[in-house]
Image (cartoon, rainbow, N blue to C red; front, side, top):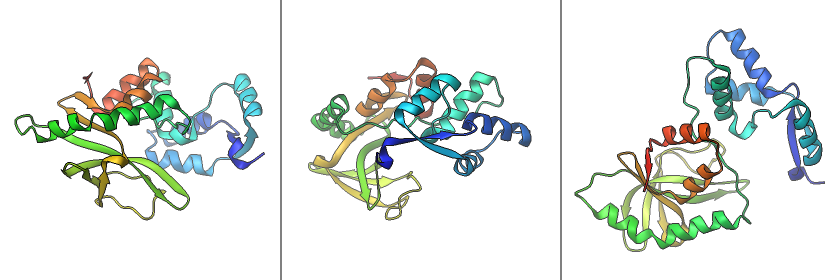
Length: 224
């Protein structure tokens, strides 16, 4: 069995560690607190079958990859105040997911719509974005870039947020993205989302409370 086949089981559960830490602090944990507690916690690596069996007996725990998000959703269920923004939930999707691959096809096929909206000076747009896959040795992720220029063949996008695992990229860096590398595009026009096919896909798999938090994080009230 390879390391990739194993899942981390926190002992004690990460949710209990965070509840105890917040009670001891007597104020809400910030994101740095939450991540430090996660990174210092004891973990047992288990097979997927054993992990699922344990989950059935002790219940679901906080997802370490969505630690901040899941903790804020748990705080809401527990009625803890103040209510904090959980941000967006990260959804990990395999390369063999045909429905997700379809979102990339839809995005590329509709780039003419995106360009027409970018060229429409009469309608103020907020944050036109393209998504691109960034890779470096040992790490890769799909990242949204703020579009600062475009032509008939591609876009120039500026990095405005970035996971800390990247070392060869930095916030503020501008990248050229040809049409063939676009993973998705979106425009948030005063709360109405255009494009964002991968976001719609991820949102469809969420529960109602998660969808509300997701929309609030994006600043979206309607999907065109």
